[in-house]
Length: 386
Image (cartoon, rainbow, N blue to C red):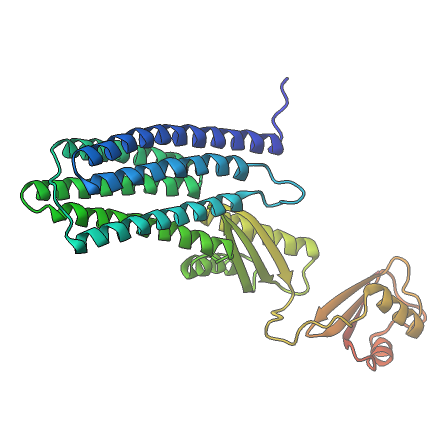
């Protein structure tokens, strides 16, 4: 009988499938971009269309971005390791930042050159009809690759692939601008071709800035939106056993979300009950946002943000047992000691499994012996019944 695959093996298989899908769609897009780039650059040069030439340069930037995507995807989809326990997805974010920066630089250079031509009035030739054909082919091809690439990007939850899809759509938009400007130039307004070239360059800059800004925000650990943050806090507060939520921090890696949350629970519950409450909060949050991959919850017995910072000078369990032994005697072997650290005071509970015949561990005696210690908050003594 075949053994079921381990979680690690399933993760490796999933990463391999995602990498294969990303590589396939990127290579297809790169071939299309190269083909359209050649057609538009040659067509723009031969048939006097600066707008089509700039659009061709835009297509070649798509080829460059596709090469970046292939390299970055291979690195970012590596499994977590000892030095990168959360994985390598920030490489993908950095790749998107580089891609956006390239777009801004290319767009700015093209916009500057064609703005100068527009103001100098050095427009002599009218675009020919093949420009319309090249632009129309570009619109159809880039719109198809946009939908295909975005579908794959959403399926494998890759911001870089989705960004590359929108980069492809800018080519479709810019080709539409070329179509309109060429028609206008052929009707007697040749300056429309250069104006369209500037407009296409502005589109390139805009998309590049969006990629760059979004990636920068992720690299500096910008959290979730206020609406999503408040929604997650509400889910936690509505979970049975949670008294309050006094801290929730979030950050993103690609499309994955990592959370840290502090949950306030009743101080008298057990550690295991507190952990179970936290697991119910985790389940509720993951149901609300499926791309949460890691939630680190901290169980608090009180909202320590409203109090002075917790003191590190309070005695440990071993120190408390020693103090009790010095003042009251050794706690009987089968008895238990429970400690509550609240409001920078220590509250002690002693559970005796059998009556104390010598009357040492009485409430009054314990309080009188311990109340002079600066850390003392209260003491309770519980005696098992017959």
